[in-house]
Length: 178
Image (cartoon, rainbow, N blue to C red; front, side):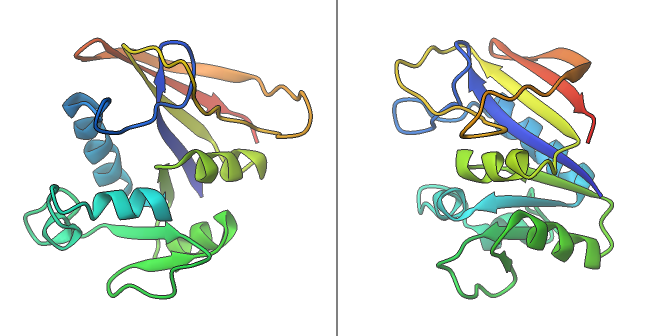
């Protein structure tokens, strides 16, 4: 299964932290919706999923109905604390999440939302492509995407595409040999 990791990074290379002072841009959100639609699915962590449930946003039920941006998509939430949510698949590990999507017939998986989730997929060598949306913001403190938390290991990547998304965001797409 082809696994694509989608993330927004700051201009100084940190994993971008969304919040009231730095909300996700419409350009990045639109791109995510396009990527998710192409894959027919996405995998998120519990914290990101809970953020999607923010009452100030459109509910997940509305997002996944026949007319919502995630209509007909399989959503997998990676969590060790959530037991069950009607209409969603809960997985405890990256491999379990991919197996769930594979069993549903998917050939591609989109991983988004949460540095911990991203680092777990990268650390297990399960990512084939990286999509980085570089936002025009610099953070003083941030999280990093890691392939190995304990060692200085390098993994060469191949630039597949580079394009502006608008709003000062540049998207970089890399391939990773597994």
